[in-house]
Length: 433
Image (tube, rainbow, N blue to C red; front, side):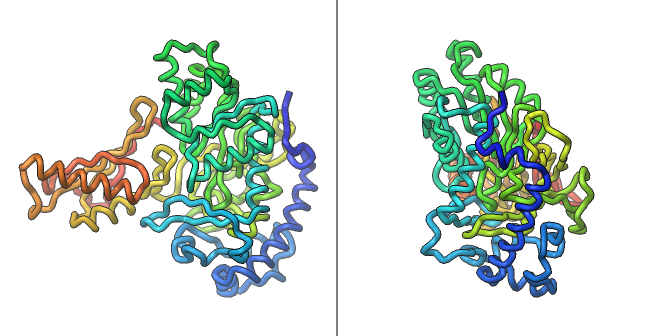
């Protein structure tokens, strides 16, 4: 039996959803115009004012926001509410070490947690479930978002955060956890470890998993489902918009329903910015209809996917997005963390290295690995092993500080990384995604 957190909204007729969006977009554009000078200036440059936006059909008239805008406006330039009304920030890394800092009023947090509650109930969750949140807590949105959603559903919530795998397994088994929320690669690793410990799928109390924050294939889904004896659901979100719960999978597992009463999705041509006809593949753009503290309009996600309004067997009427096929920029998602080659380049240059490097990403034992090969300059070249190890340690620390995750660093001889006459091949991603 399909379960809903807010059935009257999740299964609302299309006309009702459109009416909600039309009303909210008019109000939100006015709110942004009055409270966010940065975006107001962009609107003025484009010759558009709040009077031009009479419904969601006029969305195309508004200017885009991008990661570059978030960097330029950091930290307070896009805030849309007085600081005294803001109760939290969440954050994710940006392209050059400047972080994306998103602000929340209490109402923004309530809306976000409701979206996560919808996702948990779409995965079959009820107030009788035990929900283990193994996403990271803190600045990362994964843990706090699903934690709040789990509370709203009424689940017994186990806030384990990430890591300490044997303790995670102990809680799953002893507390009879029924829903697991974490990155897909960590779910796969938990499954592998449980298998080593002698647990088969029938021994594991879990029935569902809600996995997001990184790309994963259908093959990986089936492997996780078989090992843990669960149904694995995808979830999508961005810190810029709130966090996980912008869109989520239902029992049909045929794309993620976007919470259209809170977010409007568009598909654009990544090169021209033109809005594409329904069913076209292109770049996903989101407008936040309710967020007051960090109200982003027409934010370019860089994710490439399609939207579909085909009827869904679950009864939900909100548009679905396909699993993103890739990105229109060079961002990598490694162990749930956003990593840009430009961040790595910044660290190398700050430590006196030339920008001759290669990033090798792989997945071993269901965990992403990040190996950075860096050319030494002729001046620093040495065959003294202990000197090289010291330099490598220094870079490992610098990268950990910049990225928030550990990378392996290999210093190699000058001129040993192949040169390219065209665009340098900086990243070799060996993961089968």
